[in-house]
Image 1 (cartoon, rainbow, N blue to C red):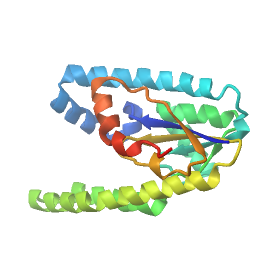
Image 2 (cartoon, helix red, strand yellow):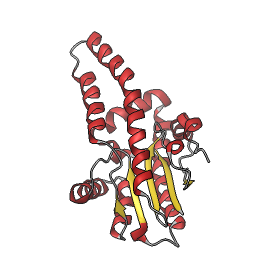
Image 3 (cartoon, rainbow, N blue to C red):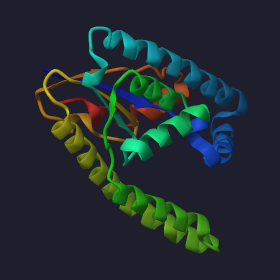
Image 4 (cartoon, helix red, strand yellow):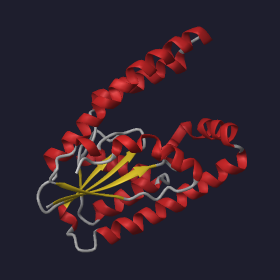
Length: 218
């Protein structure tokens, strides 16, 4: 039997890096400072619960039979492990969990296509570099149009990676954001367990945005 533990994720402050301050300001404007601060605290708490839930699911599993798939990670081996460790040291609870699993013998898998991620990055960069509001709007509209197709291409790639690498007797652990639609693209011999721990109002609105399309066809 093949099993996949799927965690719809909401990023904590450390995951956001240089964008964190800007996104926090936008969050405060949209939801109010108090509600946004509560959201950030609840996200941190939820990550602690996710780690507990994962290890409960794995208590009868051998760690060398575990494969990890991470949102936005297109590399493995030394480079991939360095990215994980650096992010963990910077306070990412997502990557702290992954680092813990790798230390125990789990294997990191290529989850994403680097070319697709770079295309998305360049589209976002064009918005940031636009010199006038008109050019910024034009760049944003191009991003909106192309990002949907890019996301579909990313999801197809992610699902294919899981389908092709996860073997009988193994457990996959997948961390992907709310925008992704992966589960309904998986082979029917993969048993899926979803760990949903982000339950504050703001997180729920983010995670459930694509819930209707994320349900596995089983």
